[in-house]
Length: 288
Image (cartoon, rainbow, N blue to C red):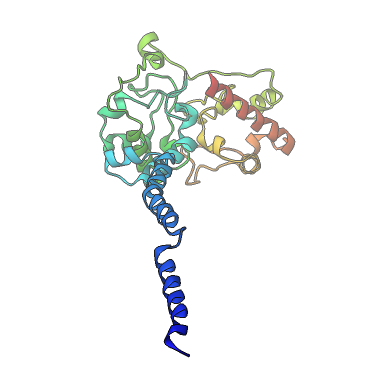
């Protein structure tokens, strides 16, 4: 084949190559634009989503623990012990119960007492004839639950935690019965229409009082008892049936508590009614 015959073929090849070079991929620019858009907007979207998430709440007692220089778990434990052993007299948040325990939340007494003084008070309690007892209500030793020293110290930490630095100390004047009248008496709540009232009077009131307010030198108050509050009905039935001899390590009165209150004929069903009466008294005291 002559050179002239081959010329058109050479020309066609060059034209095809030129066409390819002069017309790049039409989607390349769009792809680059989309990629740039994602590169710019995606971080902003992620930041916006992160900022929109609610801030996790600070665990309870964290701030107070830092301020006191203690582990948060100590306050949590102290709150649990307080609610089991102290709340029936002082309220679940330490705001006091009229006629029973003074408020401990924002308490000038707590704030002005050392840890050692608070420890001694919680261990020994405060008898009715104590000159510093102005409420007329017995404060039983160790919360009437034989709290060990560790638990008592945790309660003290909790008491420190419920003091608000900038708050005005709460008035305790409504609780100062003795200073106002020259005499005092434990809150007397007698639910005489309760089915368990007559049974309680017959078997228990001689030592514990008709309203379970306690009789000094005989029986502890039950209307304020953390033991009663924190013990199941079934366990209380067993306890009442057994009684508590004076040599029992948990006996803080030094007096025998006779089985079944000294009434051997009383039945389990009747003991349950007595327990129901005590529960009603404690509920009434908490709401008063």
